[in-house]
Length: 70
Image 1 (cartoon, rainbow, N blue to C red):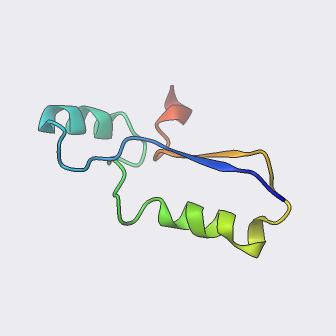
Image 2: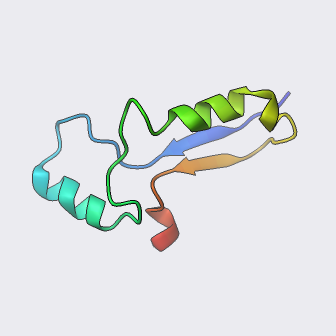
């Protein structure tokens, strides 16, 4: 049995101010906030697939590089 988790970064569902979204996006190496229908899919599919069978106890950060620059 494996146990892993995904820690998403900032995702805008439409309720954040334009000022905040711009500031966050400017501070993120990939230049945008997470997109709800696109940016978590790869991580979820990977951890659910056989490709991650020998991975356990990991926290996969999906934040466009935001924490890497902090």
